[in-house]
Image: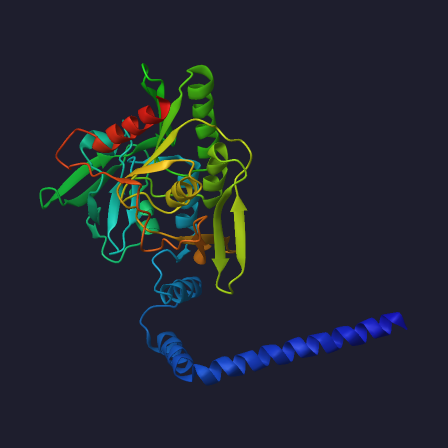
Length: 382
């Protein structure tokens, strides 16, 4: 008796789901009749009239890419299998390439971020802020960040032709760079001022190992080298892993609110720092190329009055992307949430204003921002 009731219930459930599915299809057709008609016509004409055979796998990938492109969101993207693998390698911080980070700005331009010291790009003279115009003679107009990264990767020993526009001199420069295996630690640390016991940590990206690298550096500087003040440099850091920014905030905060995120339905989630506070004076350096996860960390430290910020207004990327792996080996990178600072501020396309606005001159080797940070640490120490 129970078995018959279960089967009957299942049939009713499936019937309802089938009816809803059909209703949904009818609704889509009625509200998008023109678009669906065009799509069917194009597929039919290609199938019957094209000189070339239709590749079904590429049709579906093209459709997926087109759906995401229609969002007009520079941060959402369909990633094919190769591009998705490249992205995972980049976050793991070990790859074959020339040794640069790149970020797409609000104008869609691909900009060089912080050539890594000792790498082929650094040795050949690539500079921070260079705008990529061509990769192996392919124009970068309309090219996504992930597509560019994929093109710049290659087997060690192979050559890459990279053309960049340099705003400082208003000229285009072309470099021929031989790729190498790039092993990238995201953290550099040192005692900046031994007399006043001031430490310095530079974080270049929020990769999978960055939180552990920061912990190791802080423990060394504070525990072994006995620094009494610390400067955290997030300049030219284009971001990375959202969760890593929360982990790093937990090194300097003590259970405080780090960030809140809200999805399209208005559902909000609050992220708080762990309890592992390093309680020494802290100054954070930022500039116009500090973005995404860098801004989450900087805002958390500023709003909780844990640190003061020095430098220039940040990039203004207050959106969170989620990567959804797909069955074909690719992935969908989709903007799913917007984040707000602990004080509830939306910084997207606005940025974070430092407590002390200081600008370095492009043609001057003197680091005025760092000097200001040192002076602020000294005031807190004495």
